[in-house]
Length: 396
Length: 138
Ligand code: SF4
Image (cartoon, rainbow over all chains, first blue to last red; front, side):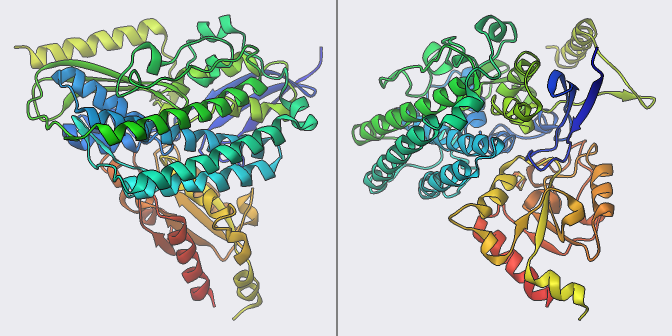
């Protein structure tokens, strides 16, 4: 048997934006196993949320992740509105959809660029990021900031969209469509790129379901799930659009799904912009009462379903706030996709799920300088204990 | 002025260290290198190893797990060392201030030469900051 070698990647690696540690076990040139270690980015957001007010948390969850900085607030606001049983104004629904879709466009372009970079095809990186700039300009005009838009509050949105901006936004979108067309043809017809992507890092649909993967990762394998369609919120049920799926689940399909989704997002956005001309009125329903109880909310972020849970005791803030970001379930799929590939492909395979580690971070427990491994039973026990504690504390 | 400073001024090589950022500052740093802003025309280049770098760009609240690694990276850096704190996070913690896992602010850990505030700072601000830094190196 060939000797096994272990290659550490990270935590500070030039190809990774965020600190993250991967261990590749290789046999010759072939990867046989991957392992990852999280926790470098953990900022204790769920705990911080317990000390903040309902409104403040919107700005905290926006800063969970720099790319999904509208997805988390949308999911969080859905959860709070579910708790308070509030219906947001029509116009706010459309504005939320527009910002959410703009974010998807910018995120997919960003990923496309990074994927090019990981393949060693820096031209794609420079192109995609150049064409992402107009999207950021639109964000700046609509929300006042290039990133971290902070557009939402529980009950609605904070800023209205000015009619004056709409023709300009549409023009920019047309430009992006043209550029995307061009990049699609240039990239997908390139034999070198094709040979690096086709049939590499395949994720079969059964495995995708086993791991509970979400978003473009699982849609590339042909599983048709999308929160926007399955459990509509905001204005997703008011406009007409399709869920994009592919069949093979390899890297090429993951690229194709994301590119087609970008076109779909532009379509949704344009329809919502048209609708804004008719739908007038308030943009926020102020929420004054936060009753005791629980609320859940989700949103289809560019990487998949983001889920937020809040529990209230009727006070100024939640007593428990739980976030589950898409990368948390997508990341383990590289246990399936990476083994068997070449070392050179490993980076793009790990990047194919569009990982976002800052969303995913968890803490590890270190006691007496030894790392503790908790099994499922231990976690369930811990969670029971905590529920008991909370119950006795807040019992009415 | 020593010959080292003379050479340093001409072309700054930067190394980027994310220590618990929300990712946005890191993206804006990459953005500075892409066609619209193109910092490479000033000779600024992102390098893959801190041993080649003149400037250390730090983003993010310094989390407890990152702290020993930040010190190690700093020690591996050749002299003269210039540290730049990007964004509100390394300065005082941004919205994450008071978190149980925050070991920052950065200037309590290593000496900082330049702060670029903002959440995230715009690429223009980053370029302006680095231009100022080049002035002071003269
Ligand atoms: S300063 Fe703001 S944008 Fe930068 S890492 Fe911190 S939270 Fe993110």
